[in-house]
Image (cartoon, rainbow, N blue to C red; front, side, top):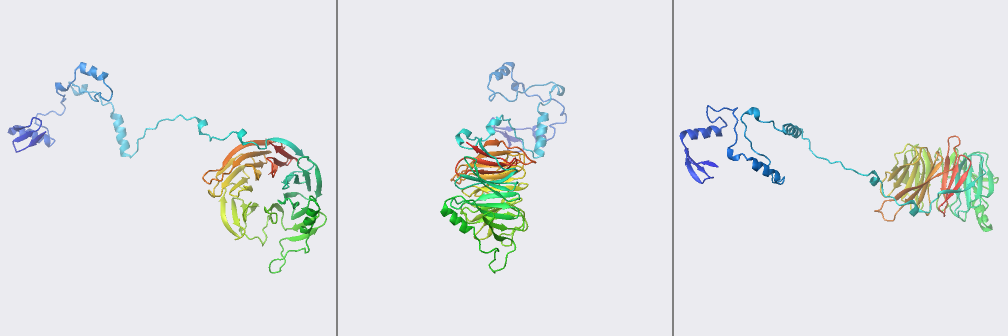
Length: 466
């Protein structure tokens, strides 16, 4: 390094001495520092070759090849006789391209291709053998109906099953023998049957057209029958509100022909659901009555169920499921399904999880403690889902569809809130035949055993056992 000490003297740090320059040398150095040619005879096209002492010999070049790549020189100087003999820069195009990327602020990241086995991406599910028992084989068939079986319901003890059909009849049968003990004629399509959940009250609710019948099934001992007859006896034929005015929405009527009570509506009733204690029930029709405590602003109601342990009521509209507090009579949550049209709902025995079936064959699982959006959406049926059901004691749930199949799933809900529910597909139950474009219209689990009942449009009821 040269450092000017005066106009003619410089300090040469390399040799650690002061050097005195001539006038011409000083002028030459100053021209070079200003970026000018050192003298007038300077040729800008001349080839400036490095000194011979910097040019390696062939032996040195051969020794470079034996060195490690990290220690090997990145550049080896050469001498050329003219500009024509100088080769082009090898990385010129690459450097220009990277310079353009810098101008465009484009990040340069080298991504390596990763080879992943598609099987490794599938969730690790337990084996179906470890999840037994669950219904898998058709064990019994219940015959007798001449039309499509619209609805089925099992008695609380699991000994009896009731079925309603489009042939206008309700049949009571024994589960394990298929023996029909009673047939009730109504003359119209039976839309829905629902057994009272209390074993000491063998009362059957039946919806036929605009009427809902509460029937005495005749089961039980004398004491049970005496209590049932007292409950199914009404002294007045109309219902009055708190002000003493007559309600025009429905009427209570004694029905001696069918041994029960008839509740007359102005619209067709297509669903009846009992409260878990058996002292209340809900009915759904195409017109809400004035005494309904929840305002839905004209939204169509598809189905409704009671919470198994709390005073909560679930009402499904065409797109959403609304959750109401019965005591406070207000909306507490709205579950957004994202489905084309809701067809049915069912609540887990713990009350914190809900499954929703739809007209487009999708089934949504909601974890109410997690979110108002579906936890899982299962695309299982190619046609409409007609009903969904949870088992009361086993970790099982099922769906049935117009595609003549019923799907059985393992649905384990853990007490640990940090652990998500486990959903595993188990079995596809087939056996029903299609009739007028309809398949399986209803499915219900046995209250105590891992059995599934299915009702088809082919007028058959099938029992699937493990």
